Image (cartoon, rainbow, N blue to C red; front, side, top):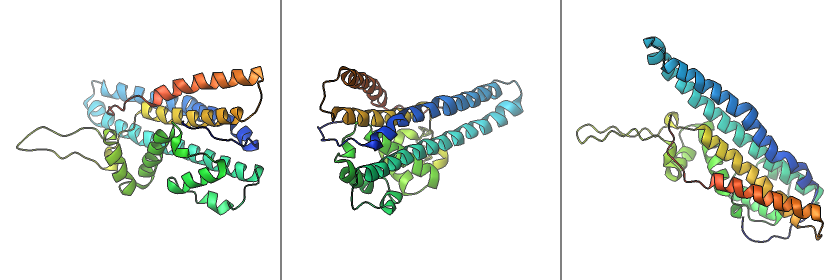
Length: 248
């Protein structure tokens, strides 16, 4: 997050206080245990001496894991989208911001429309937040998971080709084309965790902006800001790691 903004604190910021925690709890209490249980079952099937279990059931179970990862990606995207829309709605009502209707917020599609609304309502450029690139990736991936092959999946492939495993066979006589369909998309638990880190980072940065808007030298306030800055540094380091190819 770069630049200094004159932040007008309101009830919307108080309502958003637990947004980051909710996203993290969803991952820790729902997503992580579910994927761990599925992975354990896969290893059990794959290591079985039974040819039916290892040769047929294990690949089917791997497909189930992939589909579950896609479903959780959609859930995380939906959670983030609802949080942002609710936050902006609270800003409009609590700060008496004019010329923004409920219909505007309801049909707030990700991209230019959302960026313009956020700029108008909060006076800050959404794209300058350090979490924006990862959240943009989440939106593209979520849309691709929801709609299948199409515009979003093509854009996703162009920007993040590492989401598709490298199945190319190096053969000059019989090359095998890389499968770039949505069915071959690989979403790892680590990728999902990174999306949650970006959501937490976004709400942490908003809280920092809100607290810094108070013209006070209160020691407790300063301590909270220091804590949040240290926390955001750890989150930023997690989402800034170079992307690695997804593996099964």
